[in-house]
Length: 431
Ligand code: AMP
Ligand code: GLY
Image (tube, rainbow, N blue to C red; front, top):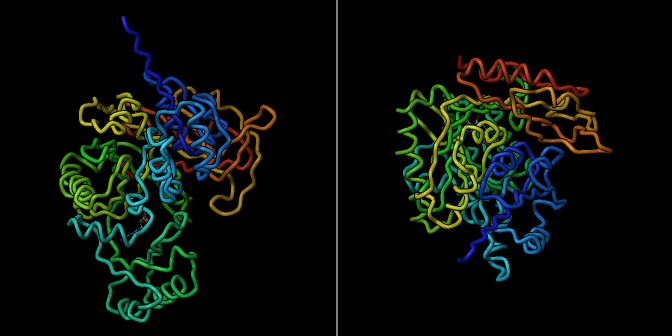
């Protein structure tokens, strides 16, 4: 008799709430042998082993992967993807057998360049706002173009700008000043050397997530995130203060439109354009009177959306990721729980502006009905302390939205640290 020993060592790259949720889900897999998270945080250590490596240290990650017989690397954030981590692995003979989940540099341009993604959408007839791109060489044309457009108008830095590169201008004066500041004065550095001027879409936002091996795809649960710092969606933009899944207004009819008009043409478009793609696609959508329009693509999962999406996936995530790596995702089983997940983010006082770190966190163990995913935390002398703007993500899974909202909010209140802040109104607009 021959004995087959299947080893599945997995490395997650990243350190936020999203990566904590991935670690939580992957740790449940019967297929997993060893799990590592680089660099991880104070919470990811309960699911695997944290490895002190930067997400852009490709050589360090490669050396670690070889030494620890890693079979699969799941890349959480966009930066290493846009900088080419997947290409780095494919281009080195000794590591090209290691599967990387996340697109190569070319596909990552869907997030890394707004101009690239708008051209892609127009080429493949994917509904999105009308636009034009400008740079230093045609800045005057851009200013004249603004005069012909309706207000408000949206200006987007072409490149990655840490979520800050989108401006919605209410007046022509403001739009002209911002366009000049972005292009001529490098308001967002090199990221705004090209600016996409885009029609303003009025509607309600939501996100749809897709996992693809480049041929077939699975539509993951949809989610809605709450970006503003203040109650009632007011104040400054943040990375995300909470999320819910599913989204009540994304009914079957709407999601069928999304699949037919957006998801299928996106996967087909990638194939037609010879853009290899193995990984997640996060499609930011605007629901305009029941019609879906793409606001943006991201080439990774969202944070805090992942914390609401993954707990609803009943299937083995490692099996699905293996399907992506091997190109047989179509044959993998995939089921989703009908329950509702709500995530409330606990942040540091002052975030998204200046905030203090190093505050001792207590009482997490008294949260019984929610999962507490760590985001900006670290361990110092045996204590868990705050180490970022977004500190913890509290997720609960319940039979209905109202119960879930109450539970997540109550559990968010059970945890303590100096300066703790969270929104108590996540999802209540949808009841
Ligand atoms: P993005 O970085 O592309 O996600 O844009 C940031 C935010 O700006 C989005 O989440 C939307 O709230 C808003 N936004 C972007 N594009 C548009 C648009 N064309 N119309 C209205 N709002 C937009
Ligand atoms: N929550 C939005 C994002 O991950 O980009």
